Amino acid sequence: MSEKIYVISCSRELDSMGMDRVRTAVEGMDERTLSLDWSNVRLVPVVANDKVAFAEGESKFVPISPIKISANSVIVQSFYGVNGMGHLSCIGSQEFKRPDEDRTADMSVFQSRIKASVLKGDLLGQVLIVPRK
Image (cartoon, helix red, strand yellow):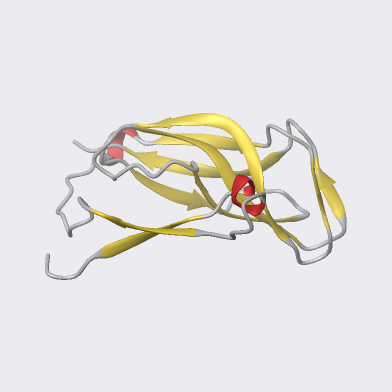
């Protein structure tokens, strides 16, 4: 790889330091070929782990019940079984892990279409976790 790749980390803790993001050079993000096991896909609900209030059109971090993701698995968002008040944008964690490492998703980004609160236990969406062969 000839160019550096940077990960942009955002978290609520950065606000207290007067920062909105941290940009860090990472290694291990080279293009790779994966062999995936589509016969062993997990359909996992993404469930809010905390109450978060939203204004109309607002996007925020929402803590989620932890989801274990094995190394080199691919996560695909399902558009069935979603939250009627808005859209799940992504899942992950606030600690960067390379795709070839085991990881746990415990945070999401959710955008609400209405002024309302996501409550603990609310379904935000579902994801398919496709493991490597």
